[in-house]
Length: 167
Image: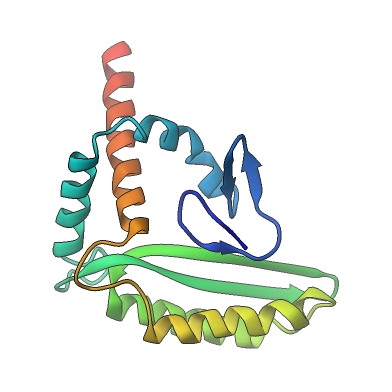
């Protein structure tokens, strides 16, 4: 099973490729250029930024950390149309669980109404959310996903600064 090179989500069906990189959706693929710039940032700078985010306040509720990447999984269907996605959020465990519960309720109500994929993907997305509520990233250290997102954020700041200097 492939993993998204940006957010780390498992890619069951679909996804997009850009060179050697694989992404779960267009949003993650758009970060592909940023990832190539980010790969030149020293590891210790990335680790420091990831730890700063991890030990900081939750970006959603402003509560105490640890903060990490928590991914919720969604599906909706209507007749022959089925759409599913995984949505990573940088937040505390509590906010991550709330988002997964919301995704389970939405997917449980809206995921079954299509053919043929809804019958296969809806239970998968529900299970991913359910088991994700009890698992998730190790609270003692930043996850690889958080490190990737921290590295990407640092690269975006660098690119914006470079663009401002040129313009």
